[in-house]
Image (cartoon, rainbow, N blue to C red):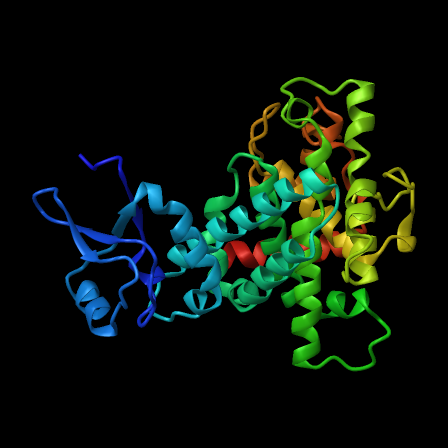
Length: 357
């Protein structure tokens, strides 16, 4: 039986030549935790190679040094995700852990200030920048399948919306170029920068929810009219929190408009059709898809295919429920909410992703 004082971590997260500020242990066959590296000592490539040769699939740290480990991961995320010898599921685990912590810290800090701190925004931008290539790779989508159907929490939701948005846009360059159409010719550097900014928007699209009481966000029964009006404020709040930052205007607009419906029945402004920012239309689709395929306090998760049927409005989906679960406005609307062309591209993308998984 393992000791609860220790936490398992993937060996691939320990970089050769790095100086981790936490102690690292290996688990002996007799169940003893043996100190493998002292805090602050350089970890040599040869020692890591020997670890791999002995078949060690995990090493351990003291549970009370978890915060130091998380900071180490954030500071070295780009290099870790580029590690060719590290399995993709371990990379996904590291990415999910770092992104969830960064979003959580950003949201909680913003709650105290009522605005977005520049250093918090820089952390989000760095996180997205470091993870772009990993997310864009087709094999990175395999571990994403494990995230579908998990509980819906604002921090994890932000990570999944980032992942789906960047992966979808990377595979649909025609949609990406519509987001900022005044650029005459896109080069790889411009594409990467545009993807980064779209990723930042995806991660921060719900930041205004920090001002919504948890008992409303996690309510098991249907929302009453007052609670629903409170929920509907969060896009405006998110926009206001980013107003004084250097976030591009198209990203701010996407965050403001990500609950606008293509048929004009969304909120907060009731915009319709092409008056809605293109990135906002993408976020609307991804946001609903993740909400529907995640367990929530008031419903179980739909399978990806069930969610797609409901969103597209096939007979099976229509019979299942016009609002996603038949109980609550939080999953309101379906087919007419979306830009139909974008939605069909997203469903094709899901099909390709499923085959890659």
